[in-house]
Image 1 (cartoon, rainbow, N blue to C red):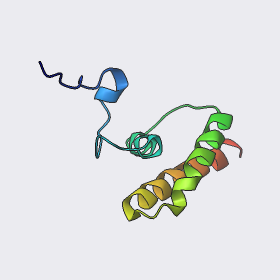
Image 2 (image 1 turned 90 degrees about the horizontal axis):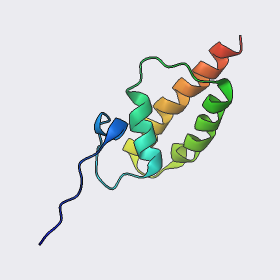
Image 3 (image 1 turned 90 degrees about the vertical axis):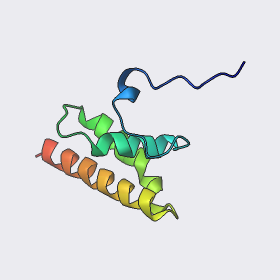
Length: 83
């Protein structure tokens, strides 16, 4: 008997995955890039920006590009929320 992997469930079923072995940071970047609007406390935005920051130096250009886009959105959201 062979077992097949379970399909994604919950919110993971709604989020496109570039590849099945994506790191948590890559999955977070993919998820955040698809958001158009969300209400999130500023400390959570700051934590997310800090968590994604190491991916800004990733050797993979696609990961780095996604991280840069997400990081920029997070920083802009923090700036706009604290005005």
